[in-house]
Image 1: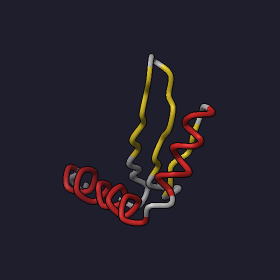
Image 2: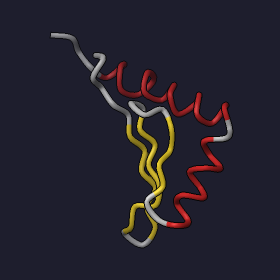
Image 3: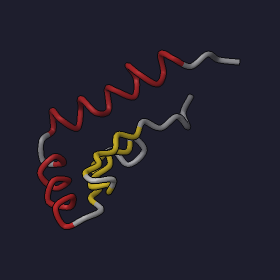
Image 4: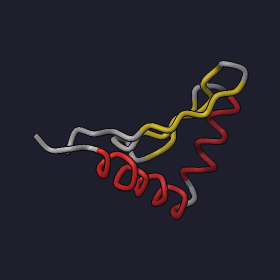
Length: 66
């Protein structure tokens, strides 16, 4: 369960702009606009905490242990 990763990507016109990765714990921008959005979102602690909580709420509750 430790290697499960939650990824939320934001696209515009089929181009990935930003991505949140639970393994990094922050947003990463892939375009000029995406870098600005990533910086903005990374500076909001409650937004980052909500994204990290999505890993537990979505990923970990839908995995069955073998």
